[in-house]
Length: 349
Image 1 (cartoon, rainbow, N blue to C red):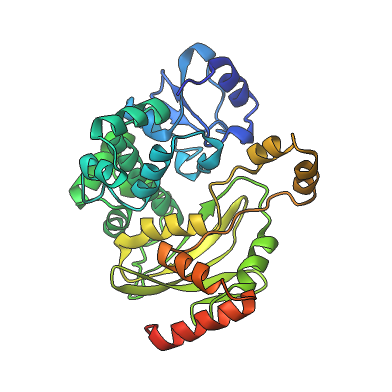
Image 2 (image 1 turned 120 degrees about the vertical axis):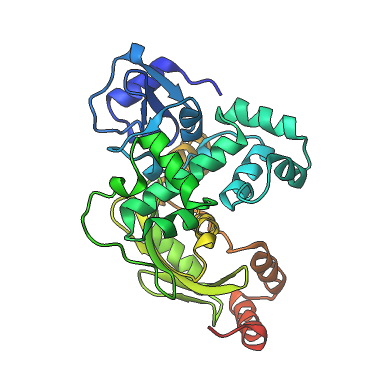
């Protein structure tokens, strides 16, 4: 993926938020990579290299900035033109496809050759599939260090690291310090507890029409599984034999706040990925509006309702179930049938 150096440099000079997450700035003199909106002094043009992803920057030997925190950048999502195979592979990696299997198994799931998949990742993301997976683990762990009071052992497990030793080794190599030293506050660690409650932020590109999203989910909420209030969405979840709940509400800045209660911490990356899909957090409203502006009808509709998203489903089974029951004449009738199905076959929490 080729990036225009001059255009990228112009964006970081004015800290243009439209490019946040679209590329990362690596500084040769400090060996640190930053978001385009980093508050640090803008480096000289000759001292920077631009990378399309955080994984590409880390694979090239650069370390995440502690000021702008690359893990908090919104994902590029639909703003990046990716082949279907690469996009699907990224989705599977977000769900942990490389945590317990290799690239060959991932390629087989996609129906492509391993060499072809590696080549496409290098071409479009600037990094290998393994580097993308490792960066995902590191940045999630760093987010949990900053946004939760979980002990380091629980953070390592939740982020998908196979061992505490490996977790410590990677953080020492990237940051020159142990994971615990990145946590500035002197407050004591707080274990997740029996219900595994964790609160964290899910960031998006503004604008975001939260009321419209809730209105859509409210009329389609399945009794016994989902509950929608004036400002929040709550549902039950089941993964790998475990059961729990998630609650999503507006957070500070351009983010939603998720409260996850789940007994198995290793499922956290999957839960985050599914929540991002349900609330369409990878969407780029500015890019979509720019494309739709060429159509006179769509341009007016987009301008009147900025920040609309395409709601997703929790998983494929639920989506298929909604599609089948949705053949009823009304949404209300379909939801009533779904509620009866839950009452008959659901497992109580």
